[in-house]
Amino acid sequence: MRSIVSEPVLVGSIDSARGRAVAAHSPILLGYPRAKIYILSGEGIAETSYDDTDIVGLTRTFLEDLERFLQHLFEDAQT
Image 1 (spheres, helix red, strand yellow):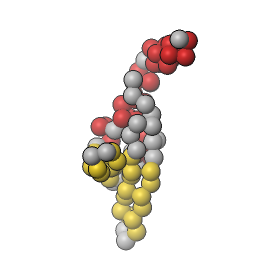
Image 2 (tube, helix red, strand yellow):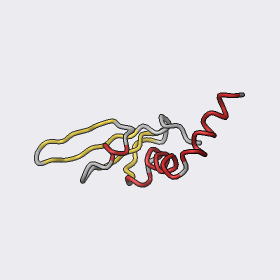
Image 3 (cartoon, one colour):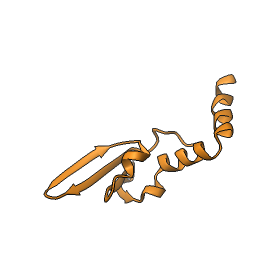
Image 4 (spheres, helix red, strand yellow):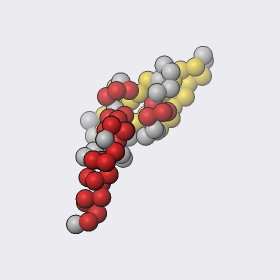
């Protein structure tokens, strides 16, 4: 299972003449219209799509099968 904090993400958007940069792990913030999403890793910085971020995949897994997700999460705590 992927960790929520395994993938630092930087969201940058250009609005008129102003630029903004936001570090986020929120799929809601990552979905900001016209956002450019960058992944920060040991290999450097790379632009990516919303659907290819770990946090979006993790959130989808959680929403699609909550029981399995929670079972896996608490299985580790019981050992």
